[in-house]
Length: 374
Image 1: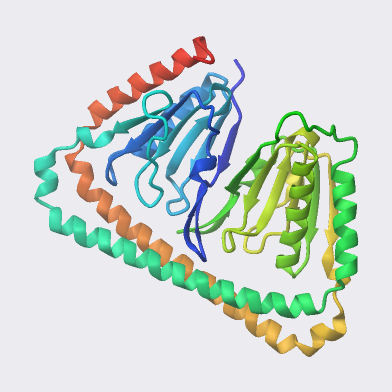
Image 2 (image 1 turned 180 degrees about the horizontal axis):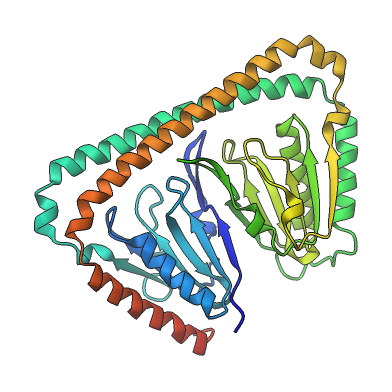
């Protein structure tokens, strides 16, 4: 049996707007089953989900690992699309509660497997640590908010230097090529799924583009210094595809979640990606990609205007980089404090009982394999 395909995504992110959640996009409303895990830090939620996901991969099912933006080694959820099954960490900051209790959604409380007496003895220590984690994240979000303001300043210089007519021409070229031979569908409303492909994490800005693009054959890469404009071009392509009746997988900017970094259009086997600052990614290394078309909007910038604002542009770039670095440093400090918080809970957990619960849930998931649509 061939192993299933693994795709890694971020359902939430640390952004200039604070923690930004796309958890309602993990699986659509007609899901077979959604398991919502509850319980404190260190109770084993991530390991619980990861092991079930790994088993399903071994049995040939495609699985999505929904990665945690605040902990590089943790999962916030898994999804098995072909079965309509998802498992989600429903604790803060991404609080998830059942929408259709019993019929679709089900809570699994791993807090049932801890020794309450042991935890009670460390109550004050836990409260202090939890408060510290919250404070560190708030400081990180202040830094990202500052970074957003600096980026707005930087974009203003670059937009002033931009030939907007040429930008619009580039947008039309991309859209025309993307939609070439596309089947126009109006009978069924297309699906637009929103997530993050990159995130600000304790180890810096991370991405999983290699897994997200693993089925893409044609990639349109939009490059250029004016990243606000490159986001706009990707957004134009996403909207045009959707209006043509095509499903779209839309991935947002981790700094400015209203902006779009990437759109994947499965029915066209293609994607439109902007050159994302802060990450290292070589699309040539994705084996499925057969063709890459590059659109460099720097060609449409007036060099005379850039010279006028040369000092301001350099200053804004340096300040932006510093603000992002400070934010990542505070996210890393929050992760270290959260690790300490988890260490208080771990000795109080009955992991054998949790393992037995995991096996029980896995057996139930396998019933959906034998009875699809139930």
